[in-house]
Amino acid sequence: MARLSQAKLAGLNKTFEHSSPQDLLRWAHEIFGNRVAAISAMQQSGSVVCHMLAHLQLRIPIVFVDTGVMFEETLQTRDRIRDEYGLPVRTLKPKLTMEQQTAEHGVLYLSVDGQQKCCHMRKVEPLNAIKNDIDALIGSLRRADGGRRGDCPILAIDQEMNAIRINPLAAFTDEQMETYIKENHVILNPLHDQGYSTIGCNRCTTPVMPGEPKRAGRWRHLGPWSQYCGINPTDLDEDTSPSVDLPQDLIDRILGQKTDFMI
Ligand code: SF4
Image 1 (tube, rainbow, N blue to C red):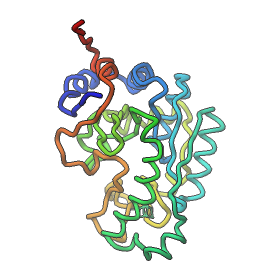
Image 2 (image 1 turned 90 degrees about the vertical axis):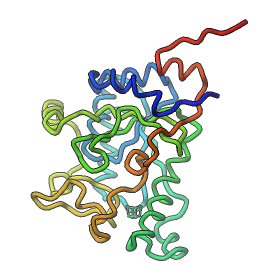
Image 3 (image 1 turned 30 degrees about the horizontal axis):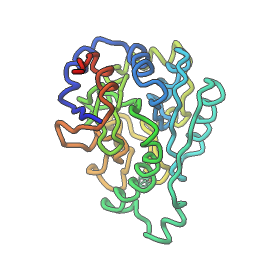
């Protein structure tokens, strides 16, 4: 195993700023083969990534974390993406049901500390189940969503998963999203039409009012200091150069370099 740091990805990230999302998805498939998956919460940007994968005929599995308290519309969107796009969708679940968790720990999502614990148990831990199966995870973060995502890199190191996060839509603007969705009749979570700009668990997501920030509907009951759940490390990781352990030949392929071996 060898170390790959965020700093080492800087050159590639600069080059990729000129690549289309589709080119980035093709690159991910070519470099990581069957050790890449895409994570989708079944909201708008995730649906766009799923549509692109289906259109490019890249059979990259979709990972969906079902916290057990998702909106029915979200589960229906997952099933439509699976059936109509023909993509393999793997649903990951937390160890405890929400009822079991509440019996053991109380109603966590009503306090700031409890929310972090709840999101960790219901989102981050289930995702860890695929940790040994992948070296890269495609996400759908966009800089246009603002907040900590305002400067998210295309390639980001995820230390917890020991994988590279690939954000092919990082530079995709709101206008580009709108055009892509319209032209391709992308399957969308119907809650977007009911004022939900982003969609998570039914306990912690509300619609947003005109003029509010896009993420104002997440954890509204906790105030503006709770904006993220931790499932996307670039939302939370303050470390400027985290690193992961990957096989040297894979690092060479990622960075497009060859290693000279001494015999
Ligand atoms: S979004 Fe709310 S209910 Fe869902 S895992 Fe996080 S704290 Fe728990």
